[in-house]
Every structure is written in C-alpha cells, then in structure tokens.
Image 1 (spheres, rainbow over the protein chains, first blue to last red):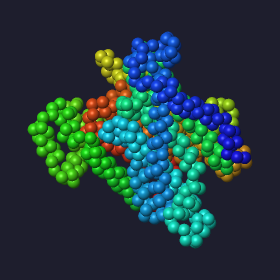
Image 2: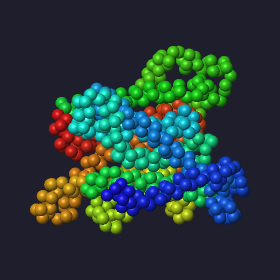
Image 3: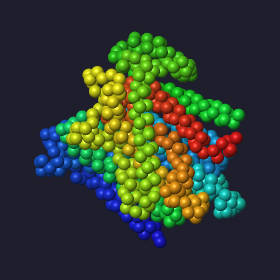
Image 4: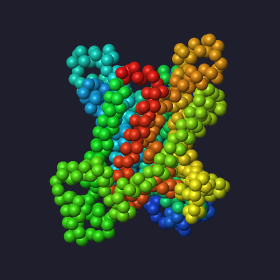
Amino acid sequence: MNFFKRFAQNRGALVGLIILALVVLLALLAPFLYPDSPWRMVQRPFLAPGEIAGFPLGTDTMGRDVAAGLAHGAWVSLLIGLISTVVALAIGVPLGALAGYFGGKIDDALMRFTEFFQTIPNFALAIVLVAILEPSTVSIVLAIAIVSWPPVARLVRGEFLSIKHREYVEAARLVGQTHRDIIIKQILPNTLSPVIVLASLMVATAILLESSLSFLGLGDPDTMSWGYMIGAARTVMRQAWWLSVIPGVAILLTVLALNLVGEGLDDALNPQLARAR
Amino acid sequence: MPYLSLILGRIGKAVIVLLAILVFNFFLIHAAPGDPAAVMAGEAGAADEQFLEDLRERFGLDQPLPVQLWRYMSGVLQLDFGYSYRQQMPVLDLILDRLPATLMLTGAAFVISLALGILAGTLAAMRVKRPSGSIIMGLSLLFYATPLYWVAMMAVLIFSVVLDWLPAYGYATVGAGYTGLAHAGDVAVHLILPALTLGLFFMAVYTRMTRTSMLSVSQQDFVKTARAKGLAPGVIQRRHILRNALLPIITLAGLQAGQMVGGAVLTETVFAWPGIGRLMYEALMQRDYNLLLGIFFFCALLVILFNMLTDVIYRLADPRIKQSAA
C-alpha cells in the first residue's frame, strides 16, 4: 500500500485534512475577501450574526466585522504555528542529532541543557519572554519555539542512537565519509517520518499557545488573532456570547484537524506500528 | 545509603536548575527594552533624570553587570525577590499570599484529572474497537484540542449565565461573611468550575496515556498466562494490566506539572481565582517585571518540587527501580 492509501484509510485523518484545507483556503483568501483592515469599524457594535446583510457573523464591541477578523486571524494562526514549529525544529533537530551521534560528554551536556528547558513550566516561560521582549510576531514566534524544541531534540537523539550502528552507517564510515556527511546524508533522512508526525502535532500546540498568549493580551498589537478576539469578548460574554464562541470554535476545529492529520500521518508513515495497534 | 545519595543528587540537580533560572531572569530583565531604572521609575510613576540617577545608585544599577548579578542572586537566597511598586508590597509577600489558592486549585484539578482520566482510559482500553471506546477517545481528543481559557469561558456561560447553578468568578461570596464550615462550603462551590475546567484538559492526556499503556501491557506474556490459567477477565484487567499500566502514568503526571502551572494562569484569569496565576496576569497588565519574574521563579520551584515527589512515588510504586539504583 502506498502512502496516500494508508493515510486515507484513517477516516478521521481525511476529515482533518478537509477542515485544514478549508482553514488554509480562508487564510489565503482573507486579503481578497476582506481587503480592509480587520481593525476597521464598519458598523454599529454588537450586531448579532445575520442581523444585517453583509455581516454574516455580526460585529464586535467596537463595530468591527467578526467575519473579517476570523479570516485574517486564520492567516495569523497558521503562519505563527508553522514558523514557530520550523524554528523549534531548527533548534531541536541539530541538538538531538549531535547528542545522539557523538554520545558521551557532548550527549550529557546537551541533554542536561534540554532537561533544563523541559523542567521550566513552558507557558509561564513563554509569557515572561513575550512580556519582556515586548509583544510582536517575532517575539511570539521565538517564545513558542523556545518552549517547544525539547521534545524534538529528544526524539531525534533517540532515532540517532538506534540508527547510528546500522550497517549502512558503518559502511559510510568505512569508506571515509565525514561526520557531517554521515549525519546529514545517511542518518537524518531516516529520522524524517517520526519528526514529520511530531511537527504536525507541534503546529497544533503552537496555535494553541499563540491563541493563549494573545488571549492574555500578549498578541502582536498589529495583527488580528483569534485569541485576541476571545480575550476582547470576555467582558461582554453575557451580552454577546457569539463573540467568544465563534473564534473559539475556529481554534478548536483547526487544532483538532491538525491532530487528526498528525494521527493519519503516523499511520501512513509508520505502517508497522499502525498494524500492531 | 543509595537512597540518601539519590535524594541528595536530586536536590543538587534542582538547586542547579533554580540557580540557572535566576541567572536567566537576571539577563531577561536586562534584555528588556529600556533600562531597569526607567522601568522602575515608570512603575513608581515619576521620571525626571535626577530620580533615575537616584534609583540607579540605590539599586546598584551603576555597578558592573557581574556585581549586579551577584547582588540579585544573594538577595534571592535571602528570600528577597524585590519590591512591587505597583502593588506597594514586597514580591515575596504577594506571592505567598496567593500561593494557597493556586495549590488548592491545581491540587483539586490534578486529583480530578487523574481519577477520571484513568477511569476513562481503562474503559476505553476494555472497549477497543467498540463504539463506546471510540466515543471516549473522540471526546478526549476534543478536550485536548480545545483552548483551556475558552473551555473556562464556555463553562461560565453555560453553568453560571444560562443555568445559574454555580458562581462564575471569585474565591468566596463577597460580603457574605461566612465562617467555619459555611465558608469552606462556599469556597468549595467556587472551586468546582475552575477545577473541572483545568482538570478536563489533563484528563484527556491521562485518558489517552492510560489506554495506550493498558493495550501494550495486555500484549505481554504474564497477561497471557493469567488468561490461560482461567482468571476472570475483570481480575486480569484490575490486578494484572491496570497496575502495570499505571507506572508510566506517574512519570507523565510529573511531566504535566509544568503544563498545569500554565493552565492555572489561564483558568485563574478567567475565573478571577486569587492565585499566583491571576497575579501573573495582573503583573502582565501592569508591566510589573519584578513581580512577573518572581512568580516565574516560584512556578519553576513548584514544578521541580512536584517532579521530585513523583520521582519518589515512582520508586515506591515500582520496586524494580530500587535494584537498579543501588
């Protein structure tokens, strides 16, 4: 069976993929559907969904279009989720690879370092980092990456430990390939599938983290995000419940979809495991 | 004395981590845009140049960096976490004042999530490939994917605003003046929603872990033996599978402690629960960096203590560890 067939066998993963595709589409179309800034006040505040034609999701406390906020927020969530995961991989993969490949003292030192970051409560660390570096897209991405790389390092290290004594690696060593070549060309490509699965779950976690930060008022003040929308709607929950429900459902669906896709990828990339389960 | 050296080793490691966090905190303050004196002056509400100079001299900010680091560290070792200009109180007093509420909330949430999670995970493992098992796993995935603060808000919306069953915020009824048991009951009623909300997310984690762990233990030989000698399935599930499956849960519980602290910040913010999580939110709103970093240090301390505790429990629960440690 090929990759796509195995993926499609997991019905949840297919549903996840469809939801995810819709969110991506919404994010990509946002600048065309709502070319105006989502911060602009366009109608009177507190319009319920469907109350006035042209505002299918109503307006918020300041008279801003909720649908526009949702579309622009999708872009922000996905972008921050993706970039911070890439940055976390860029920290975690090399550290894990070096620790696993060289072992000994290098391994000890790097793992101590990793453990240190694992011990620190990660959301609290993210809050402190963003607060002190001033909220901006860059500081948010950095903070999320800094708190989410340790699992990557541990995973990659484990894979390297189990692969580095395989015959093809010994053979590469024997023909005189450099450490660098062995790490990058021989071992790394074979650790790819678990890393991809982990990365898809990390994007989900990163989206949750970003939304939590912007809920607390630590979002980039220039971008509209789902967490900010919920945070701003908190005080008016009694009058306008939909203002907090709508963006919340958007986050829930996106994160759920990513988790489902992650499980599907796991089934498709690690078929032996899937059968044993 | 393998035990003693083990415990000493643990404590030594914890101390190193805490010291590292202090150094980290120190450099974070200096990484903040603007110099600390200006930040402090802003907090105190004045900003002329003479006042800034006074502040710099008084807090040794005119000293070289290593001297400042030394002063900061030795201050903390004497339990001096600095002063919060916004709240006009020493940081330590503020934190200690709020600590019990947080311990109560996270403790309750921890017990709820562990008990319900293990129960749900066990049921799901016993009903693999049956609809009821799939429903449990579906629900746990749903809770896992839902932002915690949003669950909290929805809980308020449903149980306080619409149904009016439970109080929406706070620690006790304001101005009710309950004492003794009535007060305890009042606090307990206020605790229900925050603790359940915080517990649900972690329940989802434990449910998944318990199920996976039980399924993998049930493949092992000693379970086959038990089955072959005709033990009742219920006995095998409880005494053979569950007992062994719980071991990784203990490790996971230790790892979740850090998440729990983060969750407490969000839950306390929504429910106005007067713990250190809410205090952290207040410190954020007021840009009270001394307080923020003090709380961060305490959060890390709590997590480390909890990790040590789970470590001890793990050793008590699994006698096999003792031999390898000796």
